[in-house]
Amino acid sequence: MSWAIGYDKHWKRDVGYGVPAICDDPECTKEIDRGLSYVCGGEPYGGECGCGLHFCGAHLWMGEGGQVCRRCRDGEPPYSPKPDTSEWMLWKLQHPSWSDWRAENPEEVARMEAALAAPTPATPPATALPSSP
Ligand SMILES: [Zn+2]
Ligand SMILES: [Zn+2]
Image 1 (cartoon, rainbow, N blue to C red):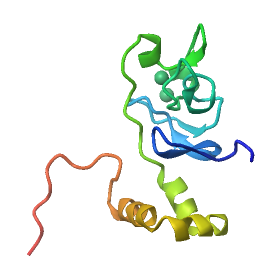
Image 2 (image 1 turned 60 degrees about the horizontal axis):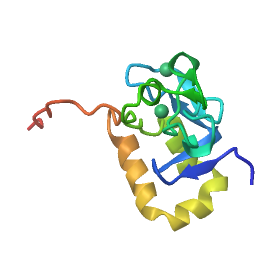
Image 3 (image 1 turned 135 degrees about the horizontal axis):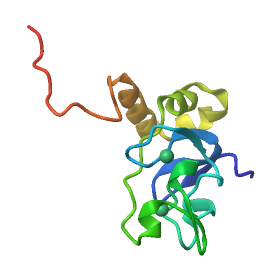
């Protein structure tokens, strides 16, 4: 199996260069993929020295063991992983190559459909708007 698409059990999300993503730095919106070019640690799932999250070139530093994010470089706990992009969730929900996966993971399918239906799944509003009468 190629590394185009894999699954990271620790962060519970799809990884690999076939997966579109946004840099996991909280301030950053750069579009990347979850391939090895962008992974903290430089190895699948982060290897020995990285957290396994994915960052753009501006948010990776070369350390002793390879490229790492700022948190890992400074010995801090890792960032929170960002949710999958809508693009990726739609792909999984619609593409024929994922039909077996959809059959085996109805809860995940429901979760993604709910996330896509929400207006802003990445950043829920601080205060809920009152429902109109
Ligand atoms: Zn890291
Ligand atoms: Zn970034």
